[in-house]
Amino acid sequence: MLVFLIVLLVLWLVLTIIGFAIKGLVWLAIIGIVLFLGTGAIGYVRRKAANR
Image (cartoon, rainbow, N blue to C red; front, side, top):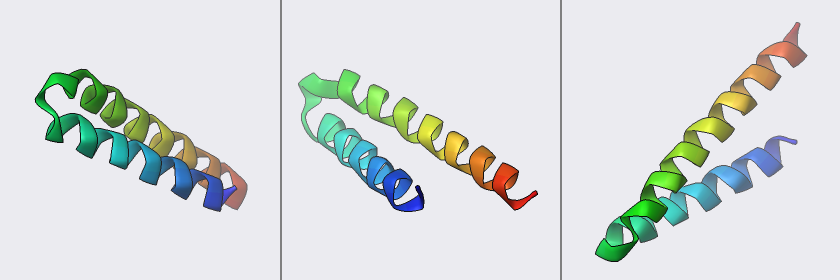
């Protein structure tokens, strides 16, 4: 599960960088940031719950 989350985070980070690199794709950068933060939050919550 942890490997899957890391792969998703890297994927969202790459999408964000591509979105900022190409000026016409700023919307892609915004989506990448939202997905990166969402995936990070879900991973954090699930790890906290698993440690209980």
